[in-house]
Image 1 (cartoon, rainbow, N blue to C red):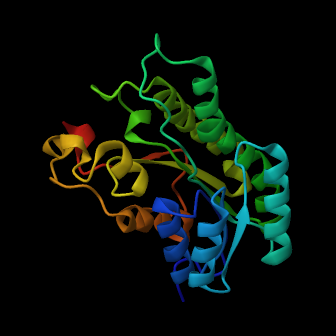
Image 2 (tube, rainbow, N blue to C red):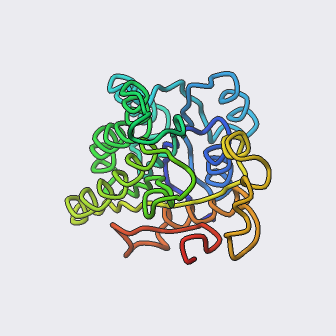
Length: 248
């Protein structure tokens, strides 16, 4: 039996990057996974490769109606949801507070932060049916510290918000057997990171004690731990996976 046998998970932003790796490893560990993304063609392809324990649903994570439909489809296909991974997110424009357009700020907030609110709001009732739940909110090291040289106010604002939301919901639903934790990665070798910073992290590897970017699977192993009963007494906490970057 795998570490996630019997778990039913929704993973957002699962068509590629970290979300795809999470979905693949979750199924390997015995979970049934609902993968969601706006990239329908890629998402369908990945789900087909994974097999019958994964399905793909097109999903605008900033839409309340879409969230209601995703949860309903997940329950109809697999049963009550016991794991939610709020993974979908965008970097947004590299701009400071003076230069950042309001529309750009609101777009990043909708996709990175409002989506997590909607996800928790819609999935928790399903978890109450299941009698157990683990919510994993993907934040960032940018939700812990300011990153010099990378002016991205909107991204940082949403990632700090994810951290606070995690703690509040963990406190509210702990006695209902629902755990909520945040994960704070940095410099993971995903298409989004390579597009933004290049293969070498834009030179930032110099400031990483481990001296390299992380492979997505390294983050996925942490996600499996938090989704599993191995982390049964952990809630409301930050889990940093950054090669030591924030230790410097």
